[in-house]
Length: 411
Ligand SMILES: *[C@@H]1O[C@H](CO)[C@@H](O)[C@H](O)[C@H]1NC(C)=O
Ligand SMILES: *[C@@H]1O[C@H](CO)[C@@H](O)[C@H](O)[C@H]1NC(C)=O
Image (cartoon, rainbow, N blue to C red; front, side):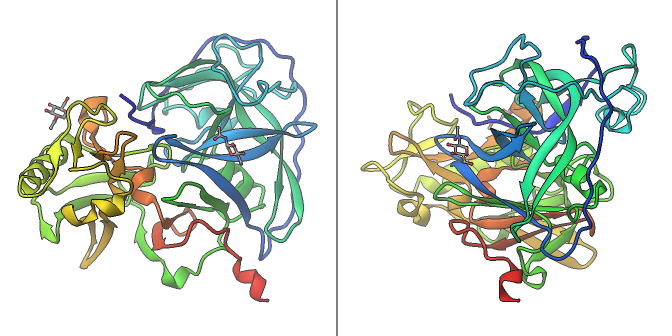
């Protein structure tokens, strides 16, 4: 069964020793101004690939790497020839680190650990281990190296950033053929936070994932018109991940009585996950509704846990849209209620067998506990923006097939 992957980091622990000699880090800096946004084309899709990737250029000389974009975790890492103990096949040769080790006492190393769990048995290096919710993991050491970027204005910048040299990876149930992960979470180790601390970009990211596959990712706030975006504050209570707090599930415009769903936006997860209460309620209402429709459950289709077949194979979610109701998650903030809407396209896929499958999965089953994840499937054809400066999450319907012209093009 292909369940896609879940990019959410669930825990970080200390790991084994690897020897490097260290060098003195240098840093570059450039004043940020209007137009200091970065824009990356994105490749991939929810099904069948199960990932979206961008290309980054890292090292001296800079080499390209394909990275999975993950707003559910902070650390960016590459499969690393340190030498590698367990690496999966990758599209490019494994990253060869230079000798610029991050020391254990460095605050960026400490930021990878829970308070109190950051110990330094090997002060000269920073050992990390990230473990993802799908039970995949990466173990390695933190190094610094040069990342090459280009602003939307065309100006090129180089920035020395910390990244993980991952020399021991355990694949999750859904390993994918990439060089590493681009951590875009809220923590100070994320590439975004590091670029921001060097005053190179505003602390804002966004992505636009197309339902046709592909799309784009951006850092900075020059790409969208903020006044047209639906904004909701990030939760002050749950600060580990990008979360607007708790939501109520609305099914076909009616309240489902399923409330208090702690919700996280996670681009590293292909599918959406509800906790078992919401999942149980949703699947039982759906099954009941579909008994009156020309769709039959198709347990023989193992693409996802719940699939239905029609009289003939379906080609597109448009073919089945009429049988399914829209869902939404309703977030309330004082007196205002903000809806995150999920049209049938945002929670269904058409399997290779031509059946329609539910792209909302049971999060309790994979150990997410009470947490609910909004994954790629439900963020398609929307620009989703994570503004760490204003502590807001926003979204707006968008054409993700075309790279945007920035607001600056009009100047
Ligand atoms: C990743 O994205 C690049 C373009 O940035 C694309 O050429 C490549 O095929 C993608 N890799 C995979 C494995 O999908
Ligand atoms: C969801 O997962 C939980 C925990 O494994 C399980 O108890 C529950 O029955 C599952 N729900 C459905 C509808 O399969």
